[in-house]
Image 1 (cartoon, rainbow, N blue to C red):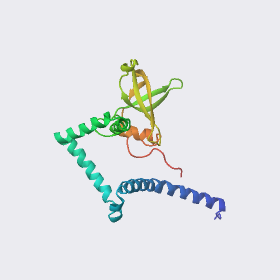
Image 2: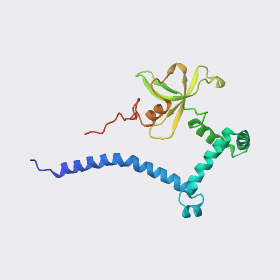
Image 3: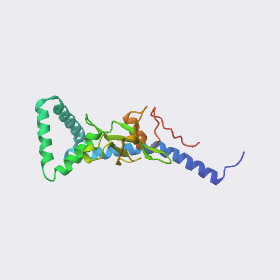
Image 4: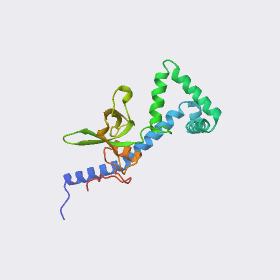
Length: 205
């Protein structure tokens, strides 16, 4: 039997180390992000957080859910929410923070979410290159761009992206993928598969 060399043992150690890193990395990062969110909200009222950790966070979730319920189900609640909305959107200075924040959050959640129409976009003719994006404006006639559309292209491994305006002929609907799967595919850099939660990438043996 061949005696293991220092180099082979080092390679084996590194292989196992990186395999372990792949397993615990996402778990650790998820726990860190969740814990950071909880502690940052808890620290809004430090005295309560020291006595009962997590109480401020849970209370914030419950109040937020209650406001959403009242704002959607009751006329008085809806009237109050709309009144505050109009006030903030017309207040100088504040409106430049409130309106963009509202638009961005509405794009991802709620009844008015925008990233629900995945499309393929041709970004290069020769060689032919297609990118996956989300149709956000189906027509741009108001800005003298007839037969043009606006498409949001998310960046991989980031929460950012950029918008392009291109001719309608350069896009076509994504078939076989939901909006959520398309976003997952784009953000993961193409690593996430199309029809399941399994990754198409396999670590080398």
